[in-house]
Length: 210
Image (cartoon, rainbow, N blue to C red; front, side):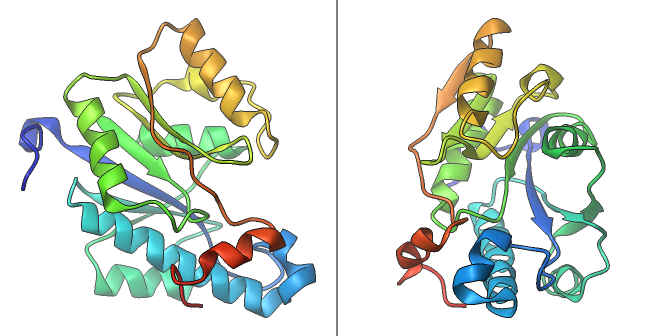
């Protein structure tokens, strides 16, 4: 069933932030456990999974924001085989890069990474619906490690990214604090695990083949 809010005037972009799966340069915390080649293979599978999930939601245009460029063959293959739009990340840190992606076009946007294969299309529909129906200004899906696996907003809100200690267990708490300080209506979805550490790998059984 098509959600009642889903129409041309209330479109929501889906932004997938992805790093090229180059051995030794991605999933570095997993390399001691599974090696650089295997870590890159996992990351490749997670990129495909994130894009597939975003497309399956049917919410709106899916954009794959790539770093260091759009040139890697995994990105080019996705561009040729799916309706995803390729863009290049810009900015000095993760917050700046997400803000640039959100602000690239007008309207609401939901941003996900590639580290959480446990996000379902329904979660993206819920997030986009809350933004486009004016139920919330900001939507978060917390991660168990103190970060988040999804952030959505009705329009660019740079205050949510300013001064955040990226890569630490303070990211979620600091983002909540900034949303409260700006008096934004915040909706939080169910918390999920992301896959960054060797102990996270067992959770992938039955979820992702790599």
